[in-house]
Structures are given as C-alpha cells and as structure tokens.
Length: 263
Image 1: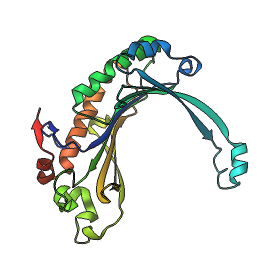
Image 2: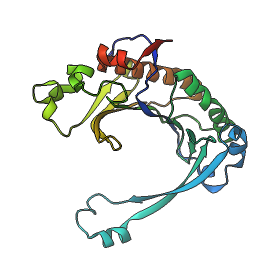
Image 3: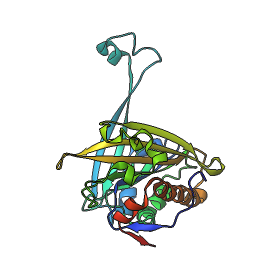
C-alpha cells in the first residue's frame, strides 16, 4: 500500500504524453566549467544531437519581493547561471539532460519500463565513470498522462465513467458535467517511508479538436540519500507504485478502451 498491487500491462492506446526520470546529486562544478566531450562520446551512438542551454536563476532574500519594484528587485537579486547540456536521439523523441545538479532522461513515446531504463544505462555509466557523484540526493520518476476521449474512441463518455469516484471527487457528483476548470494536488507517502507520490490533476484542452482532456501528472520521488548500488532497487520501487496508481485511478471501461496487453 497505499496503492493495491495490479497486473502489469502495456496499453495499445497509450495515454502517456511524456515520462521523465531525474537523478539529482551534490553539485559537480566540473560539469559547468568544461565541455562534456567524454560524456558525449560515451552516449553519442544513441543521442547524436546536442544543444547547450543556459539557465539563469535569481535568488532573493526573504521579504524583498513584496517591498520593492521589479526594477529594484532585479538589481538586488543574486543571479547564477547553470549550463544544461541536452543530448537527443536523431528523431528527438528521447533526450538526456546533464547539468551540475542532475542527470535526466525523458521521452515522448514511452512503451514499457524495461526499454526506458535500458535507454538510460549508457548515460548512467558515463556519469559514474566520468564524474563519479558520491550519491543521489533525489531520485524521481514522473509520468504525465493525458486522457483524450476522442483518441480512445469514447468521445461521449463522462469523466465519472472513466475515472473512479474516490479520485475524481466533485467531478463524480451530479454537477460534474458543469465543471469547467479543476486543479488538484495530492502528496501521498509511499510504503516504508521510501518516497512520496505527488499527483497533480487538471483539465487540458485538445487545441485541434477543442476538446476537454484530463491530465494526471504523477511525480514519484525519494529524497533519501541513494548510493549508485541502490539506484536500480529504488527506481523499480517507484515504477511499481506508478503502475499501481494508474490502475487504482481508472475504471474498467477506461482500462478496456486503452486496449491492455498483459506483459
């Protein structure tokens, strides 16, 4: 618990918009101060495209923002810049991001867990071999699902037919069809205090069809110090909870509409 065990399946009509795994570690200044040529060589076979981004961060003393104009705030702010090195697959579907604080992988075409984590292994080995972070300070796995009723072939279905009432709340009531906007955020402690599930939900609009869709943005993470040797176990734990969550949320009607295939 908190989410009951569920059979693993692959959905033929996959609602996932993107999946991200981010591993944070104590700052490694070397990543900012030099070109990551060795890291690129290690992963270039799978991620041949490169783009460098510069992120500007402003740090403000507590209380300043409410006391001064934007111009004065800008002068009083302490600015820092971080380089974000982005390595992409040839089709731009898969991305690796590296900066002084984290390594991440993301994809817009998630198929199954084993493929996703296998795609990350070369980058993880390169991180370990070249930069040797002592441990991870945050291990996170994020799934963004967008349920589009037209895409699922059930355009006339109400949300209360597709998502369970314990999750929908007011949307499952008699006024559910009249609700035009909703946003919710839940934070749930996972078993044995091994992490947190932060679940954000909202309506989003399919711009092409002008149709209301429902987004579930689930971030499963642990802020416990995680050594490299324990990383696989921690990621598998978070992934298992993510699988359980989505099955706990959706009804049998939505489950069948997405055409599940047992793994």
